[in-house]
Image 1 (tube, helix red, strand yellow):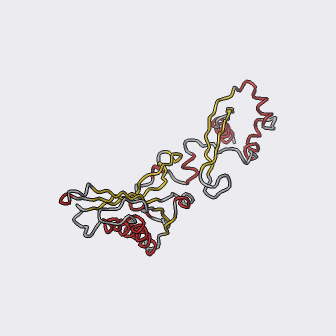
Image 2 (cartoon, rainbow, N blue to C red):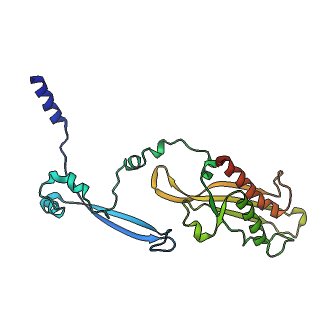
Image 3 (cartoon, rainbow, N blue to C red):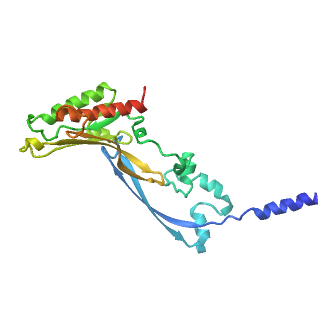
Amino acid sequence: MRWLFVLFLCLLASIAQAEDRFWLLWERYHQVGPDCPNGAGCLTKREFSSRPLSSENSADIYRMFGVMDPRSFGETFRSSDPAAPAVCDDQATELALGFDPLAVPQSLKIEALRGISTIHVDLTRLKPAPGHSTDFGPRVHRAFVAKLTAAGLRVVDADTIKTIPGQPTLNIFFSFNDPQGQCHYEYSVFASLTQDVMLARDIRIKINAGVWAYSTGSKDQTHSGDERAAILRVADALIRDHRQVNPN
C-alpha cells in the first residue's frame, strides 16, 4: 500500500499545472464572389489580428466569461459563442484533416484531372489565322466544346465556373508570325488548365495555378493539318489524359 501511495504522489507531481493566458482578438471579414451576400458562390474571407492581454485583472476577465472559478474552463469552452472564429495551432491542420499534408507523397501531375467533370473555356476571341474568316474563333470554339461534351466534360461560362470547386479553367494561347513571308510562316498553340490549389506547407494559402499543359504547332512533327486542327488537338489531348485518371 505504501508503494501505491508513493506512485500516486509521483503521478500527481508529473501533471503540469494549467495556466491561463488572455488574448484580444480582432476579426475583419468581407464577402467575395458572385451573387453576394446570399449566392452559392459567395465566400466569406476572414482576417485576424491578436494582442496579449495583461492578466493583472484576471478576475474581471473571468467574469466576462460568466465564471467565478477558473477551474470551470471546460464548461466555458464547450459553451463558446457559435459564431466565434476558429483558432488553430501548429498541429490544427493535421488534427482537422486527419493526416499531415507534408507527409502525403507527391502525385503525378495528371492526377490533377481526377474528378473534374466541368470546365470553362472560351475560344470565341481567338484572332483569325491567315486565310480564315473573321468568325474563326467562334467556329473553333463550337467544335472544341462539341469534342469535350461528347467525352462527358461539361463546358460552362465564366460566371458558372466560379461556383464549381477548384474553378478548372482551360486557357488557350494561339499565335502566329507575320504571314507576309509565307516561306517562314509559323504558328503555335499552348494550353494550360488552371485550378485553385492550396500549399501543403500552409493550407491557408490558396492560389490559382496551372495543373495541366499541352502545346503543338507548325513545328510539331506529330501535327498534320492547319491552325484549326492544331487547336482542336488540345481537346483531344485533354480528353485522353482525363480518361486516363477517370476511366469510368
